[in-house]
Length: 492
Image (cartoon, rainbow, N blue to C red; front, side):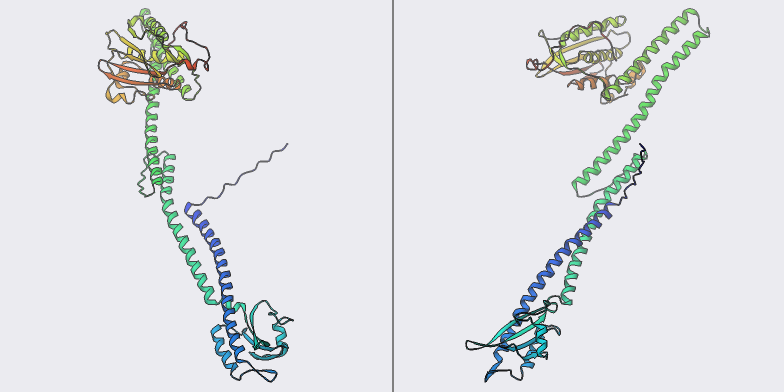
């Protein structure tokens, strides 16, 4: 089946100012057009009603002046003058007319002058209403006692009594002014709103181009806008710091990985070229092996950290006997570092302590803390550790105290940052500075924490806190209790 490739044309974008002012202007025009139509309809209806009432008053006045002589209606000679003077009150055009008819609908008087057949064109066949609906009219009966002798018709065009040019212009000016005022108001508001957004958008473009030194000197009265600008400024500062940190970390990682490679290369070349004696060659190879093991640990740390941050490291939550686990960790760790002769003392209550955690991950954290304490020990001094286990409500705490040189106050706030290593640690041993970062992530994945409690030239104390296992959890958790591991493994 042939597949047709369709290219989607990007939509045309406009600024906030143009977008909202144009749409608001259209909404204003539509809304006020509806209001204007309603207002004109009301004006038309009201004007017709008032004009008809005035016409009815004129009809009553004419009816009172018409008298009866004999059997015929008699119109006074000055009626034309009277009608002409009253016509000025109506402010109307030539469509205005007055007719006096007798009972036989015979024309007796008219203003302006017209013939009998003209009456037929102006009134319906039954002489009860105007023939054309463009006209409005009222009738007043001419009576003599209880006898009706005729009727007076006062007619005028609806157009002349509804929408005068002055009225239309007045309505147009009022609504036009309202539309312009509304549009100008939304223009000012949109302009004020779009100005900081444009500056933030420009700053975002600068950040995307790699320039993190943006200056957002924007002061508005809107709390939300100030929060947006402030948060964006903080984000830009944080991104600049992270970029600087990334560059430094990348340089540090590259240097730390390059150093053992260069050392190994030089040692191996010296042995290959017979620059050293066989005995020295063996020592060179031992040094190269240690350097390769150190590089292997650094690469493993980097891979473990990346896997943890990507969420691909599984952390199990099982009932674990913490006291038994820590005892096994101490025993196996001391065997691995027999040549250093470290001393580790465990202080724990007599009762069993159960936590909800992963035995392997807890082992990785404690072994890392012990290794860090061992590296911080002054050369020639025996490493001494005190590990305290204690219970506090629903948490179990493992305090690991060493007798190392401690951590400076400047370094204490950054020791859990990735790739961070203090100056003293850089001089004593090489590494990537991921051990404590990875350990804290492991603790957090188990619902616990890892913090630095105290540090001084006499040593440092780290605290690992884990959720305590309670009997109510037994029914919902799998029956997996920690047993002694076959062989402890230092992961960090």
